Each structure stands twice: as structure tokens, then as C-alpha cells.
Length: 606
Image (cartoon, rainbow, N blue to C red; front, side, top):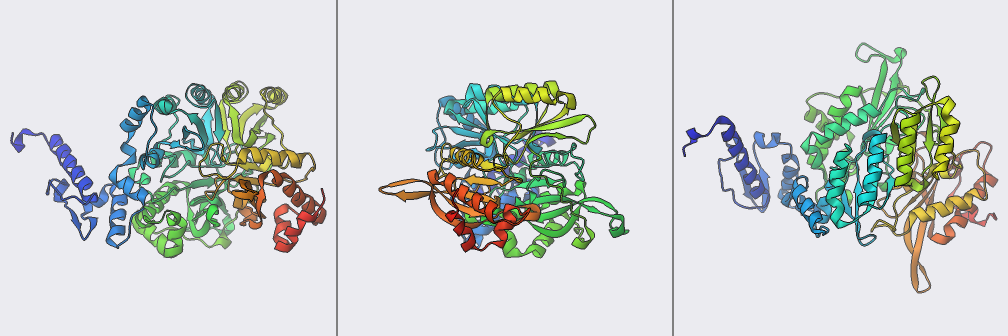
């Protein structure tokens, strides 16, 4: 058959097919077979023990950004990490058939496939549990009642019969048998929920201010922005070629923080007043760009001086991610986050690269021209509160360290549909909000929530209580964080009443999923030697915060046995109440106290 027998469309397809084969062989250090089979004659070269990809057409293909970054690392004499090699040998986005086949066979992934399968939201969490955990993508933390009800039914059929709320206003299933993985993936799509990219080296759930659109103090609604960012990610394949995970948050300046300063990219709403406006900077609401937050590595996102309109956020975020794909560390997983790129390049050089990527200069504005709101209310995510809409309120429902049963989820969906507008919103504090409740229905809604074993009120300890999954469901955790967190809260509630919240964050390992470094009191799991045994324990940190109380908690007490933590923390709280100045918050007290003074709190009798 001659070339003339093919249509133009067929020629393009065959050209692309051959090109794809060349790429696969090039990145595996195999010789090129098709030679000129690539589009417009672009060639792929292998030499010097490293793969190189040359040509503008290749560079324009989204998935090539990551492959080129890997090739550049090897060309520089560096050794790719195991995970990078695994991604190069098999694109995790193309594993659907494998995952379904394993599910049908009732088997779990092995070797590097365990890592690659996370790109579809499935985590094999052995040995903690011989099962999958499935993480979803709930952009802005918003679901409709019918979706929540469907997720509850799916959990009953194919998971553990409960749902966990995460610190990214997201949801997770646990206790998924190997033969139910396909049912979970199909079932999520049936209720219009996506898991792709919720794990592995990807941009995680995009968060926003949970009171978006109903908070009279906010500058701008942010849930619509998080949803648009979510769709931008899903529809740009290069957003899946990162060296490590990545977080993006939008904060509208209202009562409940989105914790944007703990994210790789933070967009924080600010106001330019008429007195600070000019011809090139009109008065109005903008977003201040911050970069490099990773509190598990003791760093917050830092201001860049860049000011963006809402419509500019997606393009700039995309540019930042693409530069990170090109420059992030492909050899050392511990150094493969954006923070370390910024540490190496500096902010100015990194932003220059972003400008080159997007093809224009970024707007730089001096901080003195910006009005930054400080409206946060640390109790606004719990209980009934008036909305900005007349006659309506929302309720923040307390979830015991972020976990609810499927029956409770269905009941909450019924309440949201009957008394609200059908929305359910999840928060970074591991609880949920039901908005648009008529004020005359508040008592009835409160009764119905209590009837299913949940609560709308929380003590100053429980309102800010955050715990990761812990050793009951995570192979990395050194302690049973959820159970220990509940024990701590119960002990404190039995002894103290506070006039302001104290946030207690309990995390199981160095990944710091519960962000222990930003808690007023932060605990990270460890093993403690007791006699001939190694038992669960914690290192205890004091004085962390975020926003206008920003600070990394200091390590004060090491190797505290888990069962001793309630009494230890009771002594800390008792000492704070005894020694604080009038109206002084815990973080203020901790900031002005020396390490020796804080350690002496254990001498306080309670």
C-alpha cells in the first residue's frame, strides 16, 4: 500500500503513533527505530548514558516536560529516584486496564506499581491494613446531598462503611478489599466524583474558604475559583508530571481560614483601596501570591510581591507548576518539593522563569498599598451562625476526628436536602458545614443532628482537634492518632473550660498530614522504649500558628508515652491558665515564654 492510500487524518495518527514509540524507546535508552517517524521530522537522541529529547515540537507536547526533566537530570550525572524511574517506564495515567484487571483477580499491586496506583487515588496501606484507601478530589470541599448519599452507599458496598474527612476538605474511603477497587473507581464516577491525581506526585485537592458566598466579611468568593483550578488541572496533562505532591489554596479573607500559607501556592484575597489605586492598578479585590509553604518542613508560603486578578490565577498557577516540573529535584524525594526549588533559585529567578513560561511580566505591588483582612473566627466552623443572606444560617457539624459512618452521612445528606439547599461543605478542620438553613428551622436541625450521634457544639479543645489516620490505617504512623486525640480531648474537657480555642494537632509521622507544626499544641508520633517493649508515644511541640499568628511550634517534650499524653497536656494547659496575662492566647503565651519556662509547666498540679 502506498502513502497515497492513507487519508491526511490517518497519516497524522500514524505519525503520532510512531513518535510515541520513539519517545518510549528514547527514555528507556533504547535506539530509535522509526528515525523520521516523529511529527515534522523531530528526532529523539540517546547518548552519554542519558536520554535527551530535542526539538520544539517535542517541547510543545505536555507530557514531555517531565520526561525532559528526567533526561536533564541524568545528563547532569545524577541518578533518578526509584519513583522517577517507575514513572518513566510506565505512565501511571495509562494504568486503568491494569488496575481493573488486578481488581477482577482480587490482587493488590506489587513493587513500584503500589506507588503508581496512587495516581488513581488508590493506596495499598499494608501492613497497617491489608486493603486500599481511596482518596477523592472534592474541589473547594463542596458536594451535593445526592453525591454524599451515593458515597455512603458505595462505602457500604465496597469499603469500610465509613468516610473520613481530611485536612484538605477532602474525603477518603478505607478498608477496600482488593477485589473492590474497580467498584470504587466506577462508583465514584457514577456520583460525579474524581480520584485521578489525588495521590502520588500530583496537585492535591484545591481548597478554598469554606464559607465562600455566605460570609459577610469575605472579600471575594473562592469556591468557584477552586473548582476552575480543579478543571484546569484535569485538562492539562503536564499538571501530572510533578517531582512530588503539590498544594494550592484560595482564601477569600473571611472567617474560616483556608490555611493558604501552608500550601505550595497560596492565593490570599487583599484589597486595593481608592487611596492606593493608580492608573495601572485599579481599586478592587486582588489575590496576593505566596509560594513555598510546607509546614512539615517548617516553612510557610512567603509573599512574592505579585498581585493577581481572579482570572489570572489559573494561568500563573499553571506557569508555576510547569517551572516546578522542569526544575524540581528528580533524585532526592525529601528535597523534591517547591520550597527547595525556591531555596536554590531564589524567588526573583524563579518568578523570572514563570514570566518566561507564561510569556508576560507579572504585576508587582508593594505591600504598603494593600489592605489585608484579618477576620478569622476560630470557632466559625462549628455550631450555628448567621449567613450574609437574611433569614438564613449555616451549621458546622462536629465530626469525631473527621470520621462518620455511612448511616450518618446519609442522614446529613437528608438534612441538607430538606432544610438547606442540598450543599454539604467540608473544612480543613475535618468537619462539615450545611448552609442555607432557615433560621426558624435551627432547633429542628440541631435535634436531628444530635439524633444521629453527632453534635453542633464543641469545646475549645475539640473545635480545633485535628488528627491524621494514624497507625490504625497508615503504614508510616508510629501511633494511633485518632484514638489518642480523642483521649486527650476528653481529659481536657473534664478539667478545663476555656474562653478561646486551643488547637491540638496529632500527626503520626514526618509526613505531618495533621500539620502538627501549626497547632497551639502539636504532637508527632514516635516509638518509646518502655522496659523490653517499644510502645506508642509522641514528641510534643508548643506555640504554632497560621495567618496573623504564623509560627512553627517548638519541640519541648520528647518521647512521651501515648497514655501519659492526656495528663502531660493537661499540665501544659493548666500552667497556661495559671500564668497567662489577661486575654492572652496560648500562642502569645508560648511566644513570650522561654523553653525552660514552658518545660516547667509540667510541674503544675492539675
